[in-house]
Image (cartoon, rainbow, N blue to C red; front, side):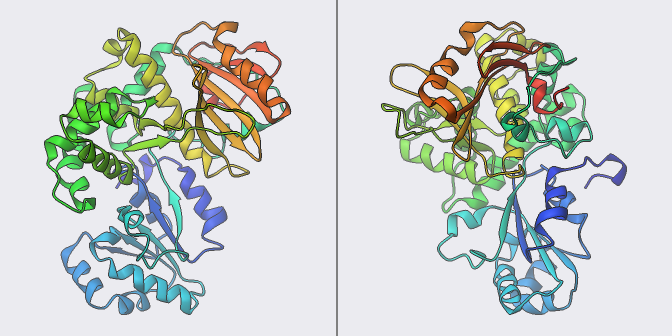
Length: 413
């Protein structure tokens, strides 16, 4: 756990304090290992049950109700999956009326694979946590770029963030521990992280006994294909595993929040749209490590730099989707004629289209598919943005802008 002086202000903590804890008795915080779940939950704890400790886990399995009854206030239950019986006790406590008591659970998202029998269904509010946003790193857990993109104000902005700075931020990733390390030490940290995923974490979630080297091969394929439409057959070939094994391993890594699938967008007015999701490694630092890239070598790899810029943007947006002023969903767009838009944000029927470019210059041609989508959707098209590594806002047409990527963490001025 980070010392208090080194803590970052987390979006999840603000939402817990302002919105969730006042209204809900039980909350499950899920997210990748090392993203800060336990540290954030501890800020609200009157008491903590750390079920990674064998003695406490054994007691929780034998008499979970008594353990809950012995505590008042906010109880943090860390690594709940080590004694799943504790979730049934939380369910019974909530059903009986928790009063002022609150329960914060952190740990594996294994429950998603056992939804039909999991007692937390309908009782535990799920809050997803990701790695640090650039805003959180800078000390801001309030500004929401998704709300900014859907606002009616002009999106003009200016940035002091250069392309070389963005490359450094991409390969550094978003894990608090990794960010505190220098380049070589950070590489060792990521290698240990990947080994832990393949050797322990994924095997805890799996129903069988997957081989670590095959798990790593599938994850490495996802890194090589991050930002692309998911092709399970290609992943199978890359990793040297059967299609069934590749699909199972993809699901495992998705459960562990290490990869994410962004679904394809559909609209009744548009036809012949692809239905395949895109796949992303949830942290660009993991992807860069698996590809053997640092900021200098990434600069020389034209294919990888485009993929990792897009992965960086996705990982910056995801933590804000559940915390905005209205429900917002993220998709990608592609039709069978070759038109595609990297990302679509949809809120209340309105759409914001996002293209991601790694270069420092931008022109009208970069917005051609956004322009086409604007004409198809009419008033439902709220805004089209080309996010690029330049420093100035450029208007490319009606409701079409090129904006610095730093808009995602620096409010427009």
